[in-house]
Length: 250
Image (tube, one colour):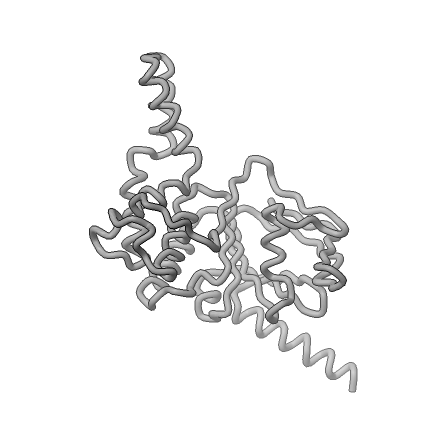
């Protein structure tokens, strides 16, 4: 469970939001909406620990693994597939431990690590990574190309695949459909609907939000409000609230 308790955040002298209080449960898929500059990306920075609240608390289970899309991609000489595999940090740690145990000829440790490797899906992970790359529009064989050989837009797709490969409990996506063609957007919709963890999604694509999300957090007038339902349901409820406020004003 992700819990916001009386949360207030400022950037310099500017108040982004105040007194935010709600909780998100495992498996919920939540769209984050609001005008440009209202604090959507700052909310992600808060969750990632890059910013600290000015007031209140943000509670995240310690055991939760959080995945997000990096904004920069190194000019990595390694193949694209290897870069995507880095998204599973535990897999890489087990691989390194296996290599060390093999050098030391540590039989019991090797048996333990091979069991863990199987448990975390290590024998399927390369095919999973290849499926992600294919879904995001990479052609057969491109997984072997060095990361440095791809253009900026394709590197962003690699960053997205890197985040999707992570066996995360919480996935943060900020405008993930940027740089994607229609086929890749449709594929990503399906992938996110099947994603078992909690999703927070910033997007200006209403159809994409409708297809993926079951809740919406709207940031407006320095308030975070949680709505049940997809984006269309949120728009209906918000329109009713605005009409009611207008009637009271008149």
